[in-house]
Amino acid sequence: MGDRRLQVFYALAQHRSFLRAAQALFMSQSAVHFQIRQLEAELNTRLLERGKGVLDLTPSGRIAFDYAERILALSREMETRLAEVTDDMRGALRLGTPSGIGDQLLPALLAEFSALYPQVTVHLDIVNSAAVAEGVAAGKWDMGLVALPGPLPGLDCESCGQAELRFVCTPDHPLARSRSVSGRALKDFEAIVREPGSGCRQAAEGFLAAAGTAPDALKVVLQAGSTEALKAAAATGLGYAIVFAQAVEREVGAGSLVSLPLKPRLEQGICLVYRQGQYRSRVVATCGEFLRRRLQETLL
Image 1 (cartoon, rainbow, N blue to C red):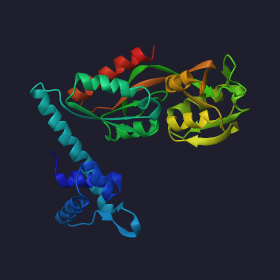
Image 2 (tube, helix red, strand yellow; image 1 turned 90 degrees about the vertical axis):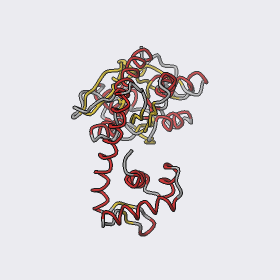
Image 3 (spheres, rainbow, N blue to C red; image 1 turned 120 degrees about the vertical axis):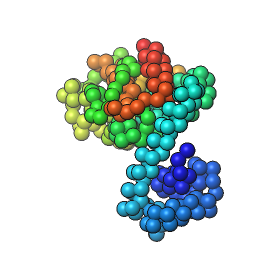
Image 4 (tube, rainbow, N blue to C red; image 1 turned 90 degrees about the horizontal axis):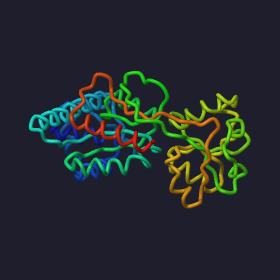
């Protein structure tokens, strides 16, 4: 459902590329151009700036994007609620999560969920925890799975358990044979950190502060935008990293990285987040309950 021209415009505004929008919609580029021209003619305004090789939204386009997002969300909600009347478990679900969770914990769980409910399509987006929280509050995702401390404004949070964060390094690192690593020891060695807004980074900075070490005292040699990039850099010997224990099980098993507990033990809560007051469809409620239950079992 939803006006096809709005769907095309929304995809184009997200991808900022006629080629990538066409690929995402399984359309030709000429068809995308045609739909946009039709929409601009009907609205009697220009929605896109196409000059200098950059595709951007005009002021009218930004207004139209906000309305398109809400209209398409309402269309999806209507389809889902009508399906529920017929007791038909089908529809789409939009889920946002950071890479440490999305790359390591979710693939197997979503495969289980898909086997149980093959007519439900989950759209998974990987961004950092802060961006997930903001996106869920704005209605971009139906729900999010985040690792952030404390309550989040505008969101309902449901705990899925605690995940341990650990110090990881190569087997020849000076601390590799330690039984545990303290916050004070971290400032003496090169560090690889996540970007601002990452839940892991916030937890690590809180750990350092509790040990009397200021985050800016670290010898940061690289800032990585994903857990996979963090692990790959650590495996080269560039520096140590702090990541979820589950995220490095494969590398530890292969012998490329060593995982050590932090002292005191550092844990971070994993929680499902929903926009406060939003209607939770049967699909959203069922997937949320499934993920909460399975993560609690996984994180034991």
